[in-house]
Image (cartoon, rainbow, N blue to C red; front, side, top):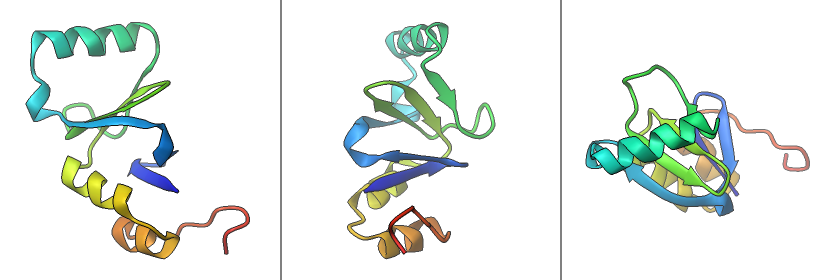
Length: 98
């Protein structure tokens, strides 16, 4: 299954290492980590700067998502495409899944 992180970004659930609230991570260590990810071109902002609600850590990238941790958790727990589409509020078409 996949998870919609906001905008046009959808990633495989299996790639997620952690989903962390942006409010909970305003420390110097977090700023340093995000700066490092940015300098290595592994940081992807989804949406407008300043609207981040969560950090989604994967094996390859760090996504700054405008979607809350609670909403991302619900999406991650979705078991079917129909359930995910209902949560996201969009029609999801994936090759081979109609």
